[in-house]
Amino acid sequence: MSHLFPALVGGSVVERPAVRFGDRSLTYGELADAAGGLAGRLGGAGRVAVWATPSLETAVGVTAALLAGVPAVPLNPKSGDGELGHILADSRPSVVLAEAGAELPGSLRELERIDVDVRPGGGGGACVAEAPDDAPALVVYTSGTTGPPKGAVIPRRAIAATLDALADAWQWTGDDVLVHGLPLFHVHGLILGVLGPLRRGGSLRHLGRFSAEGVARELNDGATMLFGVPTMYHRLAEALDEDVELAEALGRARLLVSGSAALPVHDHQRITAATGRRVIERYGMTETLMNTSVRVDGEPRPGTVGVPLPGVDLRLVEEDGSTIAAYDADGAPTGSHDGASVGEIQVRGPNLFTEYLNRPDATAAAFTEDGWFRTGDMAILDADGCVRIVGRKATDLIKSGGYKIGAGEIENALLEHPAVREAAVTGEPDDDLGERIVAWVVPISAPAPAPAPLGPELSDHVARRLAPHKRPRVVHFLDALPRNDMGKILKRALMKDAE
Image 1 (cartoon, one colour):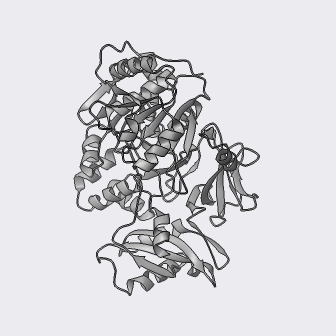
Image 2: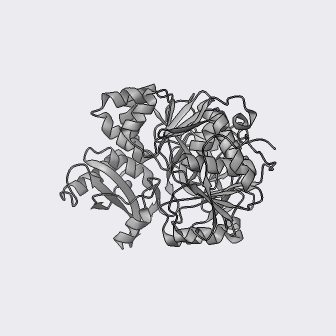
């Protein structure tokens, strides 16, 4: 049994800044006081819901629940009534934590409400309950793209294992100051972005709302790390063309990390060319937290998500369950790592969730008989053993003309064309090929629909860049791609539009 926040409960860095949101901040001593006082009120509360706005109150509320040994259920403030009602009925929290004055939807008004007080004084220091490493820490709901959201029960050991493995891969220490503008109802912004700095004894500066100006300001004022999603880095890459000061600020960062979706290679290249810094990618899921990462002391590998983190076993498997490639006990790749053989990623390790809440059948189906979690993500191993994700099994693996093709590599090829701003690739049924490749493109200048000749030009571009059988057979032009709150493209919405 170990503390998730040794710096918070140990009292050795009481005057060090812990968290800052806008012009409001708390030192470690103040955070221990505020969260400790709230933790004393939560003992025996069962699950607690947290109205997860980007605020000090959310950071204090989640920290308090973890100190009290009570599972927290972060709620997306943008959830619709139907989704929110499902989450509340499924998780059955006994109380909701929120910022004073925040207006909560009607479905939450029947719960006991505790307004989180972040003012120092009166808390009495961190009240820490004894909780085993396998005890539930968070119940985080999946995006629900294939049905109602499922509540992934994340144990305390998974949080500790992931954050400590990232500290190893990124050389993350208490001297680091993290800046980001991510939402706090999901793994990326909450576990990595808030709990990560607190476990290291470092500092978080949350932007509230992401902006290039905010990023530059914080990096110029001593921040050392930036977390973001591809949409954010794309906006930074676009701004770099005319903003020398932004380029200089990004160049000062010790670490730039992108996650939650693949960062296009051309954005990697634009950022590195302008700043001299490379963006590191990592790979994880709600159910697994973090599985792999490019190491800060390793070779640059744009377009890959690196190698398995310490403690994580990873393999690629065929549809029949046979292993295509894996990593041995020493972390060396074995089997096919030719950069071409596509398989589903399966993982196991201390970073995994324990169950889907109230869904024993879904939990059982998510694991193989020998205990590997089926991620549903498809990947290849490069010759040097780096994992290169090519898409989701359900939406991004296209079987065309006898080939297994990952949508991700086609999207990257399209994005290298000077006329393309954004791109997504899906498959649709074809009587001859089985599936044909369909591209959805947002052009840089021409409004949709783009000039007709651009479609064939893009198909030929992909064929020259990759291989003829990977060319899009159909190209649609749009004004924008549908995305969720984390910046992921909603391909099912595109596929529905094509029907």
